[in-house]
Image (cartoon, rainbow, N blue to C red; front, side, top):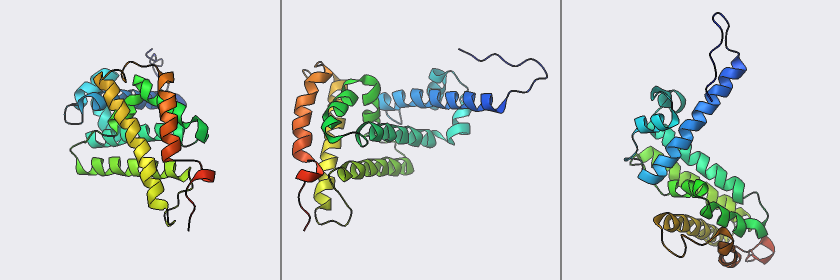
Amino acid sequence: MTTSPPPAGREVPSQLRRRDSARTRQRLLDAARHRFARNGYAGTPVREVADEAGVNVALINRYFGSKEGLFAACLTEAIDGLRRATVDTPQHMLPSIIAMEVADPGHYEHLLLLVRSSGDERADEIRSAVLRDYGEALAARAGWQPDAPNGEDLLLRAQLILGTAIGMALLRSSGLRPLASVPEESLVTPLRDLVNAALPPISASPKQA
């Protein structure tokens, strides 16, 4: 619904302007995430993003600085959502959360976006950084610390889980059956086996020397 302009001579309250700006920025992020995930960076003209969001293309530079900035913002939003969904939940709920992320097209677009190369060196550096940060946050659930003797092994295990989730999203989006057609609940048990084997809770994780 479009906000009606204020009567002539009456200034728009700053709180309303901020709220409209936040909504516009989010519409651009939603449209860009969808197109970047489906078409890649090079195949996503900014004008098409703006058209889908229903705003002037000049607002992309206003809110994000450039196409690269928009891509980086989408990556940050994607990893932040994934972090909230998995890192801040109890260990026993992790398989169910990953299954939900993979099963919901609105969610697995975030996962697809995380493996899309931008063709821009700086944007790809950001993508690698957010993936690395998420892997570290996930590994920390099992007691990972950067200088611990088993730190590299735990980080590897966390990255395997992340890679599995992204791979599942790719295969579901490609229509591969039965993975593409099974309901969310059918994914939970095999994911639980994977998570428990790869990244056990702290009490069961390998002891530090």
